[in-house]
Amino acid sequence: MKRMLLLYNPKAGRAHIARNLDMIIQRFSRGGYEVIVYPTQEGLGAREILRGRGVEGIDMVVCCGGDGTLHHTTNGLLAWDNPPELGYLPVGSTNDYANSLGLPKTLEGGLDVIMEGETKVLDVGDFGGEYFNYVAAFGAFAAVSYSTPQSTKNSMGHLAYIMEGLKNLPIGQIYPARVEVNGKVLEEDYIFGTVCNTNYIGGFSMAGKVDTMLDDGQFEVLLIKAPQSVLELNALAGKLLARDFDNEFMTMTQASQVRFTFPKKTAWTLDGEFGGDITQVEIAVRPQALRMRV
Image (cartoon, rainbow, N blue to C red):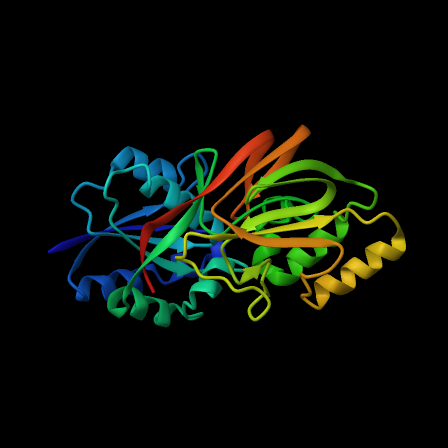
């Protein structure tokens, strides 16, 4: 019999997984798996569970939670040589990465994909040794996900991120940075910057505006200059709402490697989790590092 390690966040998505845990285990058991279940908890997240338990003898790891739980699961898996295949049941508030993968929004549909779907080999990002699945970001709105309380995420979903972002709109706040990408050096005062591999950020679709592939060895780099006046801020807001990324305020390119240097410590978020305060970081694509059922 094959063996499955099931990791779930009991607080994510209004505790949806915890309420349906028996049904989930039965479905996997009928599919021929011996299921080993671990709930994540404070001080013992997915990364720590995988580090402590190991993956020897495990055929599949299934992560149940939001983008943050998946982030820690990915880091736990990639610490091992030849990590097992990953299944993902997204039950977070926005599930940006799951939306980019085209995963079903229902629990039953997600179980079908894990049991019957095909395996896709996906790129991950390397943020100075910390892996991320779909986004590394600094500046405006970058702290919104990890600073929004879980209870607010559960009750308000995407609206929670919008409200928190509005409260943190950094009028007059700038992030001077030197960016080395594709043989060019860019030095500007920015309001936001991201290296991402997704069609969704904060629950908003960029599909049709950004040509994103999740396994091409390239990530998208988006840099937004800091507006110099309220008039420019309003113009920038309009461009963002229209999903217009080709204008005088923004630079977007594709790259497999990019280096950021800041004159002072700058906070980053990785997949919605706090990524640290840094003055310099090199971000690189680790191509086709993760095997996932889709």
